[in-house]
Length: 412
Image (cartoon, rainbow, N blue to C red; front, side, top):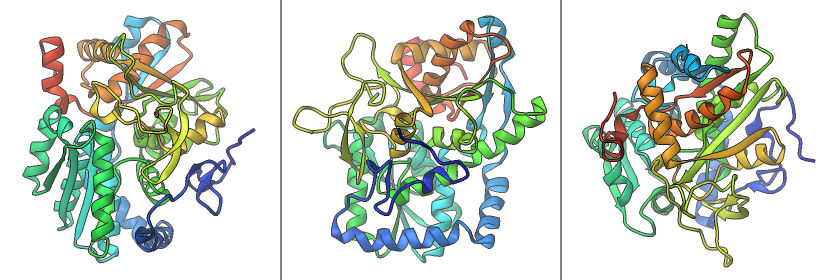
């Protein structure tokens, strides 16, 4: 049986080949990327324990990102559902409106340390791109973003924000024109430009070093949450469910990281994938649908594929969850039975968005609306002694046109 080791950071629980449980992750990369990957790995290993770098990181987390983000009780939603207490960690209150700002800020700090003048990144929902363009502007770096043409149309507010921040956006027209193609094109570009350019992968996917940097950066969310829970309840309550949407998996890793050593009976991790349109065979939920292990973007993971091993088409109303694979860390957590994964349909996410925005003064994007859908299902079945906490990791502003088209109105 696969076990998670206590008192060792999850990101370090891999073997010499960078594989978790000997089968997830790794570095399946072209020879031309071996040296840049090795150089970045060595630099990050040094910086993550460097007191001066940590002080610099914390300064920008506090004074640029705006840590800590709020932890609030959704009393009206709790009363409406008449079951478990529902709380939210409102990470969307961070500068820029989503959790992606933590990863982008750390990558730009690393780029400066490496002496690079350019940063390149991928984006689906537009938040990773928006945040990287913000951080690049803050740290005087030139920025290029690869984004699927389909996503550019459905996430126009974030496209406009990236351009306003001075980033060059490269539309990707291949395949399904979504996140998976954007990541592929971004990596191809970096192969030819790694001497002058630092690459920021927007989630906990890709070669091992990018998985580690992203998870290490977003762990700020759970560091804050742990303190906030103790401040409210005076201790860590006996029954907590931490519910998070899962696409690439960055916000969930950040939300769960500081609670890895607790038992699943006390603190349960629930990841909610994109189930796609109701009554459709298309979705973006590899863990929920027993996908097989394959290699995508330089790492072994559970990935949606056909009998020939080719990547399957995905579909989700949420651009940020519309990805055929999943972080190697989430594959590890699933097989270790430390996290439970399920999915919500497009329609369930929209219904959850409507209910939450009607009853509470928050407006989650369509990504965390998937997590709220699961919370709404679970809460009535549980007693008030159970604490459900949802990571409201993104703001709905980017989805205003989709929501208005589907619901006829947009609540802000």
